[in-house]
Amino acid sequence: MAARNLGSTATPTPDAPTPDAAVASAFLQSTVGGESLSTNEAAKRHRARFHSLEVAEVRPLTADAVEVTFAVPDDLADDYTYLPGQYVALRKDFDGHELRRSYSICRPPVRGSVSVAIKRDLGGLFSTWANTELVAGDTLDVMSPQGTFTSSLDALDGKHIVGIAAGSGITPLMALAHTVLARSATSEFELVYTNRSTLDVMFLEELAELKDRYPSRLALHHVLSREQRTAPLLSGRIDGEKLDRMLHVLIRPETVDEWFLCGPFELVQLARDTLEARGVPAKHVRYELFTTDADRVEPRHGRPVVVERGEPTVAIEFTLDGLSSTVDSPVSANESILNAALRVRADVPFACAGGVCGTCRARVIEGSVAMTENYALEPDELERGYVLTCQSHPKSDRVVVDYDV
Image 1 (cartoon, rainbow, N blue to C red):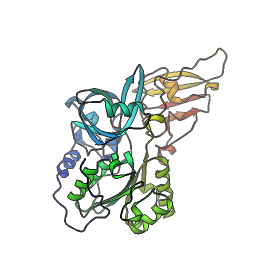
Image 2: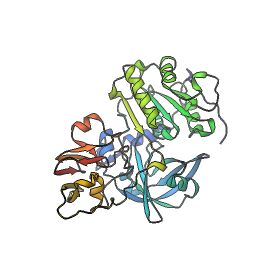
Image 3: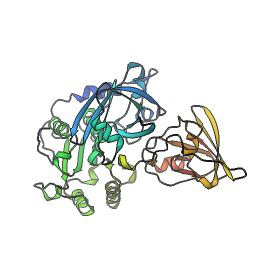
Image 4: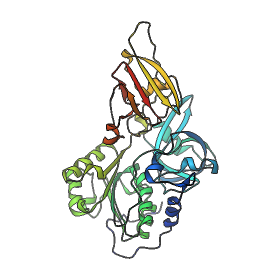
C-alpha cells in the first residue's frame, strides 16, 4: 500500500465533483413492490435469512485485513438492499462446527454487491481463514443485511455528522461518510479514527481519496497510539483527557447534529460518557460495539438440555415466520430464550450471541425475562417489550416471544 500523509483538518477549498452522487441517487430511488422505501422501512423490511453468495473479490487492506465483496444475483437483490451502517453475518462450517461472524458493510449502497472488511484477530478461526484462504470464486452463506446503526438520510442539508472509530470500527463509517457527503452539497462529515500505526489504518487510500473529493466538507483526524505524529493531540492512546481536549480544539459538540461511535467497548463507553458530560443528548449519539473473533459464544443448534421427570420447567413459546413452536426449559438450566428456541428450530436468527448485534431481537408478548447484557437495543425498544433472546432468561412460568413483529 502506498504511503499517504494522514491529514487532520478540512481545508476551505471547493469540493471536487461527486461520483458517489449517482450511486446515492440510485439508492434513494430503490423500490419494493413499486413503493418507495423510507430509511426505517429499509432497515426493518427483511427478516434475517442466509443465502449462498459467490465471492467476487478479496482485496488486501492491511497486513491483517481484507475487503471481501460478494456478488448478489438479480433474484436476491431486493433481499440485500441495505443502508449505510448495517451489517451482514457470515456463516461457515469448520470441521462440522458452525461459526457465525457479523461484519459491517463498508461500501455505500449499490445494487448487486455487498462488501465487508474482515480484520484478523489473534486466535480467531474465522477471521484468520478469511484473511489467508478465502478467494474469489468461493461461496459463503451471507445473512441479509441487519442493524440499526443508521441515520435518517432524508434531511442532510447543512447537517454536521461526526464519527469516532477505532481499528475495524471504521467499516460502517466508510459507508456512512460516502453516502452523507454524496447526498447533500452542504452536509459535513468529521472523523476521529484511532489506530496503532499508519500500517494499521484500514481504507487509508480510500479515506485520502474521499478527502480529496470533498476537501471542504470532510475532516479527518487520524490518531496513532504507537506512532508519533506532529500534533501531540493526535499521538498516543485516546483517554478521557485527550478526548475532552479534542472536543475543545478539533470538534465543537454544539455544532454537531449526529454522533456515530464504533469500536471496542472501552472507547465507545468513554466517548458516550464524555459526550454526556458535555451535554450532548443521548438521542443524537449512536453506537456500535465490536468483539474479537476469539471471544465469541457459539450456540450453534442450542446447548443440549435434558428435562428430568418431575423437574420444574418453563414453557417457552415463540413465533417465527408465522409458525409457533413451544419448548420446555428446566428452571435449573437457566438457558436463554435463544438456546431453547434453537433446540427445536435451527433457523432461529442470531449472529454474535453476545448481546451486541441485535439479530436475535424479539418482542415479549407474555411473561417476563431478564437480560444479562444489552448493547444493541435502544431505550424505546425496551419500553415496547423488545429483548435480545440470546441474553434473555425466563422469569415467569410461561414466556411468549414473537420474532416477526
